Length: 360
Image 1 (tube, rainbow, N blue to C red):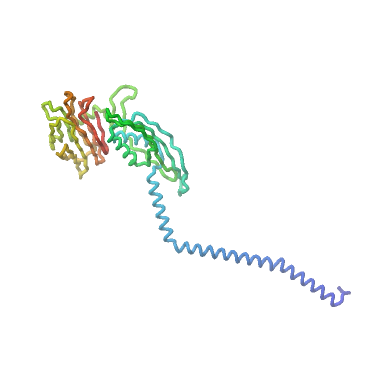
Image 2: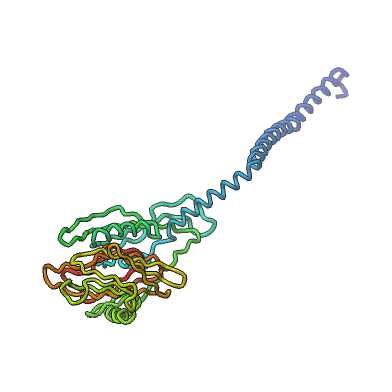
């Protein structure tokens, strides 16, 4: 540098200055400019996000209302499905069907519950929601009116059910519908849903299934014992005989012959019985033809009707009744039928609704 003249020195200083300026630009100003540009983009994105959030916030009341509405609709739909499918509940369904129709189910085919669909909606707690299904196949033989009532019972059952398959034929001789029904039951499992256990009344069946014996009623008494109890303490009695006998062909009355209806007609007549809940009392309204009577009894757990029938006296003996029973209470109506004709019964149930048990 000492031997260099002033002009060369200034050139060297100028080059060094250029190098320093270039280095400052490359390693200082340029990254800062890039960072500033990146910050500008971030600020724009944050501003857009802020605007979007403010737009949502402006509609918060609408969103809260809609969320509540959708939640209520979801909960309402979930209430239509039980929390699971258990054999005990299906047996309770069949037992209830037998009681409603007054007919027995001789066999039952059951499939294990299987998951057929997973719901996208996740619960707040517990397992994910899943739709499960099981199938019941059962043969049913009953008269046509009861067969229609069977379908109504299935579709109004508390659990979600459908009938994917049904076969039926009508026997004109017996007046019975012989059908085979496949019932498809659905449930939604998951979350914190709990399937309640059914109320089971025991013992039901016979005292020993491996020996011949007398069937037990739903409250544990044998059918014979229950008939004897109803004979001693009935709320309504029905007496049926032929017109050639010394007593009226048809008599319907309460205890001590209150509200008595009498008919001497040699033919089948329609008898309607309606059981209605009152305040601390139960009204039994019955009509034979155009004649209607009423018996009022104290409120109790079971209403007893005693039917004393008789065998036919010949081919011309056509006296009888077709009974339609509508139990509109939560009580059990128990009907004991005795001494009826085995081949051509005088007492025939045309229709029944509600909790009704018929013992013969």
